[in-house]
Length: 120
Image (spheres, rainbow, N blue to C red):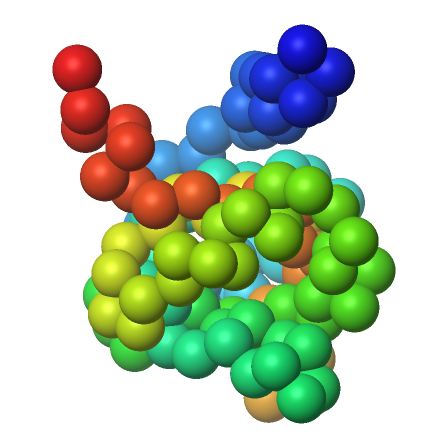
């Protein structure tokens, strides 16, 4: 029950913005900084050595998350078993800033396959 409650809290406290591209976040960083965002992104890769996961949007802009702090969380262990490059995921993250190359710097909060949203 605790797991379900935690997932529901994440899903219901997420701020819905109409953007669909990562470059829009970096161009308007002051609007999105310290906000929780949910976007539909595709999985590029999960690196088990460095514990980073990379997603990309429809314009092929990447966003990479450090997963070291998430390894022990049950939802992450479960999602990690079913990762498929190229598959769409609903990714929830908190925007921290923008890097020197205009890349979005963020903390990963949650992700799940987007197909789950489409099931009845």
